[in-house]
Length: 447
Ligand code: SF4
Ligand code: SF4
Image 1: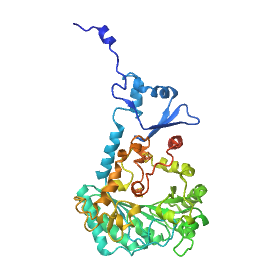
Image 2: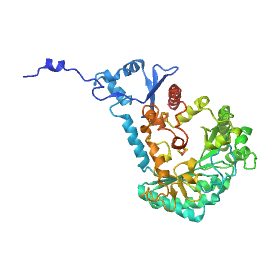
Image 3: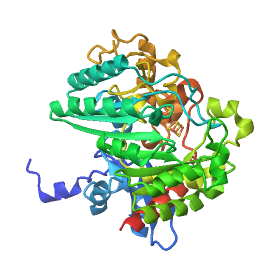
Image 4: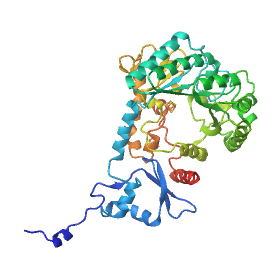
């Protein structure tokens, strides 16, 4: 039998759905004032754009459109339709985040001591500066991690305690770690998290020479509002000294002012941001400001008579502001706790998977002296403290997360909270429109 044109025309064209295409399961949307259409964000590929009224109408029935309909190709180009299993892709990204050596990242506490006494701080302040012997172990560990991973990038975050109580450790270890990276033809970068009280010109110059590019300083409000929570161990004020350091010194790095937001100061963030913009203009220093929530952690709860903790529902705008700054394609891991190549080291050389665990010896998984990432289980003193953090990178075993539109962005939330407190859902989980509107406004401002 010869098949004529009539036979061919009689064949039913496949729909997009039958050809394996479907609307992404990770879309959220909102109407936005002034836009002709609907703003749609894709949480998997980290995009946000406007769908015209006709696009929006067709997207609702896109699976049933003919495969060769021009709108199917258009939706596919924009990531609104996909022909793969996005949840399976997230699992793969999660595994890759655990093992993939984009770089070696060390969070080093040169001391756990601190000159402040902040009511929400999780750290118990004790300990002296890191000894030369432990510093030797840290350098060896960096070498082993670079060797085992094959990575060419070594990044260090100085943390504590207050790291600037031990400036000589930072200076000496930096120069040795820079040599380790450079001998391999790799790159080195560093940042520091400090209260800013000891950021004199001499210390700032030392940090710049130590390749510190980003400095995070916490300021909780202007003047007395800051001093209510950020006080010296003897109760003295700190605001004037910190601001003088930022205004009067020439700082050869970016400064990110973090404002810890709680119920008492949540109305003050905009004022602080404007204040810091004036400090930046007056000094010529590169200073930006961002909010961070003081959440229900053990320390804050224990000391909550001193501080009203942030209540999620009231903080939606700030949380959305935070999220918009970091919006992008799904990354698979939530934080360094999901990467084998990301390790925290306390002043005694104990290793941890999480910043909030760094002052808790019971959560250490090994030591800088003994642990070898080429044989990560056998050389860990407490392998469970390593594996339980890494394995939270697979929240897809949680039925609620598996069905949740926020999964690409949330990855099941902070691993520490998931393990030891409760699952930390995104605080604006029930208000996706707020995030879409903020993303759209951000996108407009960028263009
Ligand atoms: S596990 Fe949570 S607390 Fe620990 S480093 Fe990651 S985000 Fe921070
Ligand atoms: S932790 Fe909560 S918000 Fe995050 S993916 Fe799981 S269910 Fe969704």
